Image 1 (cartoon, rainbow, N blue to C red):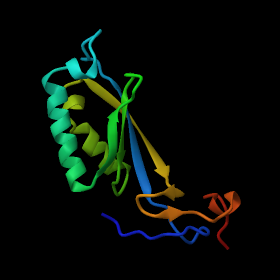
Image 2 (cartoon, helix red, strand yellow):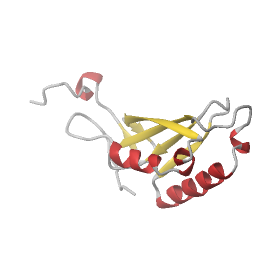
Image 3 (tube, rainbow, N blue to C red):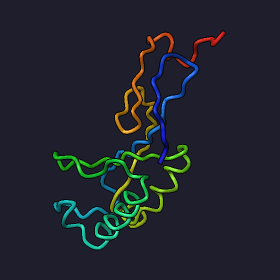
Length: 130
Protein backbone atom coordinates (compact mmCIF):
# COMPACT_ATOMS: atom_id res chain seq x y z
CA UNK A 1 0.00 0.00 0.00
CA UNK A 2 2.63 2.54 0.94
CA UNK A 3 5.83 2.60 -1.13
CA UNK A 4 8.10 3.40 1.81
CA UNK A 5 11.82 2.84 1.34
CA UNK A 6 12.87 4.60 4.53
CA UNK A 7 16.17 4.51 6.32
CA UNK A 8 15.48 6.37 9.53
CA UNK A 9 18.47 8.42 10.58
CA UNK A 10 16.84 10.99 12.80
CA UNK A 11 13.75 13.02 13.59
CA UNK A 12 13.40 14.25 10.00
CA UNK A 13 12.06 10.85 8.90
CA UNK A 14 8.79 9.39 10.09
CA UNK A 15 8.50 5.73 10.91
CA UNK A 16 5.50 3.90 9.49
CA UNK A 17 2.63 3.51 11.93
CA UNK A 18 1.19 0.12 12.63
CA UNK A 19 -1.81 -0.46 14.82
CA UNK A 20 -1.85 -3.67 16.77
CA UNK A 21 -5.19 -5.08 17.86
CA UNK A 22 -4.73 -7.39 20.83
CA UNK A 23 -7.78 -9.61 20.68
CA UNK A 24 -9.38 -11.29 23.67
CA UNK A 25 -12.55 -13.17 24.49
CA UNK A 26 -15.64 -10.99 24.50
CA UNK A 27 -18.67 -11.16 26.82
CA UNK A 28 -20.46 -13.60 24.48
CA UNK A 29 -17.56 -16.04 24.20
CA UNK A 30 -18.81 -19.59 24.78
CA UNK A 31 -16.84 -20.87 27.80
CA UNK A 32 -14.88 -24.11 27.51
CA UNK A 33 -14.84 -23.87 23.69
CA UNK A 34 -11.93 -22.96 21.47
CA UNK A 35 -11.97 -20.19 18.90
CA UNK A 36 -12.71 -22.88 16.32
CA UNK A 37 -15.92 -23.79 18.15
CA UNK A 38 -17.42 -20.30 18.50
CA UNK A 39 -19.69 -20.70 15.46
CA UNK A 40 -20.99 -18.21 12.90
CA UNK A 41 -19.37 -15.06 14.37
CA UNK A 42 -15.90 -16.58 13.88
CA UNK A 43 -16.70 -17.73 10.33
CA UNK A 44 -17.86 -14.19 9.50
CA UNK A 45 -14.77 -12.77 11.23
CA UNK A 46 -12.49 -14.96 9.08
CA UNK A 47 -14.25 -13.82 5.91
CA UNK A 48 -13.90 -10.18 7.00
CA UNK A 49 -10.20 -10.58 7.83
CA UNK A 50 -9.58 -12.27 4.45
CA UNK A 51 -11.02 -9.15 2.79
CA UNK A 52 -8.83 -6.87 4.92
CA UNK A 53 -5.80 -8.97 4.00
CA UNK A 54 -6.67 -8.81 0.29
CA UNK A 55 -7.01 -5.01 0.60
CA UNK A 56 -3.53 -4.80 2.15
CA UNK A 57 -4.81 -3.54 5.50
CA UNK A 58 -4.28 -6.71 7.56
CA UNK A 59 -0.57 -7.51 7.60
CA UNK A 60 -0.65 -10.31 10.17
CA UNK A 61 -3.47 -11.89 12.07
CA UNK A 62 -4.48 -14.99 13.96
CA UNK A 63 -4.88 -16.61 17.35
CA UNK A 64 -2.03 -17.05 19.79
CA UNK A 65 -0.73 -20.62 20.12
CA UNK A 66 -1.64 -20.38 23.82
CA UNK A 67 -5.31 -19.98 22.82
CA UNK A 68 -5.49 -16.87 25.03
CA UNK A 69 -6.53 -14.37 22.40
CA UNK A 70 -4.93 -13.23 19.19
CA UNK A 71 -3.46 -10.37 17.22
CA UNK A 72 -4.13 -8.28 14.14
CA UNK A 73 -1.38 -6.04 12.76
CA UNK A 74 -3.03 -3.30 10.73
CA UNK A 75 -1.57 -0.93 8.13
CA UNK A 76 -3.86 2.06 8.56
CA UNK A 77 -3.56 5.83 8.42
CA UNK A 78 -4.33 6.38 12.09
CA UNK A 79 -5.76 4.82 15.21
CA UNK A 80 -9.28 6.01 14.36
CA UNK A 81 -9.20 3.96 11.14
CA UNK A 82 -8.01 0.91 13.10
CA UNK A 83 -10.80 1.40 15.63
CA UNK A 84 -13.43 1.65 12.87
CA UNK A 85 -12.12 -1.53 11.27
CA UNK A 86 -12.06 -3.49 14.53
CA UNK A 87 -15.42 -2.15 15.71
CA UNK A 88 -16.94 -3.50 12.48
CA UNK A 89 -15.31 -6.94 12.78
CA UNK A 90 -18.15 -9.50 12.97
CA UNK A 91 -16.82 -11.30 16.05
CA UNK A 92 -16.48 -7.96 17.88
CA UNK A 93 -19.99 -6.90 16.82
CA UNK A 94 -21.30 -10.28 18.08
CA UNK A 95 -19.48 -9.85 21.39
CA UNK A 96 -17.48 -13.04 20.89
CA UNK A 97 -14.25 -11.05 20.74
CA UNK A 98 -13.04 -7.83 22.27
CA UNK A 99 -9.86 -5.94 21.50
CA UNK A 100 -7.40 -3.35 22.72
CA UNK A 101 -5.47 -1.16 20.28
CA UNK A 102 -1.82 -0.20 20.56
CA UNK A 103 0.05 1.96 18.08
CA UNK A 104 3.60 0.99 17.18
CA UNK A 105 6.06 3.45 15.72
CA UNK A 106 7.99 0.96 13.62
CA UNK A 107 11.70 1.71 13.66
CA UNK A 108 12.31 -1.76 12.23
CA UNK A 109 9.76 -2.96 9.72
CA UNK A 110 10.65 -5.43 6.98
CA UNK A 111 7.29 -4.84 5.28
CA UNK A 112 8.09 -1.20 4.55
CA UNK A 113 11.85 -1.74 4.45
CA UNK A 114 12.31 0.61 7.37
CA UNK A 115 15.48 0.34 9.44
CA UNK A 116 16.58 3.07 11.80
CA UNK A 117 20.18 4.12 12.17
CA UNK A 118 19.27 6.83 14.68
CA UNK A 119 20.23 6.80 18.33
CA UNK A 120 17.60 6.58 21.03
CA UNK A 121 17.99 10.28 21.79
CA UNK A 122 17.46 11.15 18.11
CA UNK A 123 14.28 9.07 18.04
CA UNK A 124 12.88 10.56 21.24
CA UNK A 125 9.72 12.47 20.24
CA UNK A 126 10.26 14.89 23.15
CA UNK A 127 13.58 16.01 21.67
CA UNK A 128 13.85 19.58 20.42
CA UNK A 129 14.47 19.21 16.64
CA UNK A 130 16.49 22.44 16.43
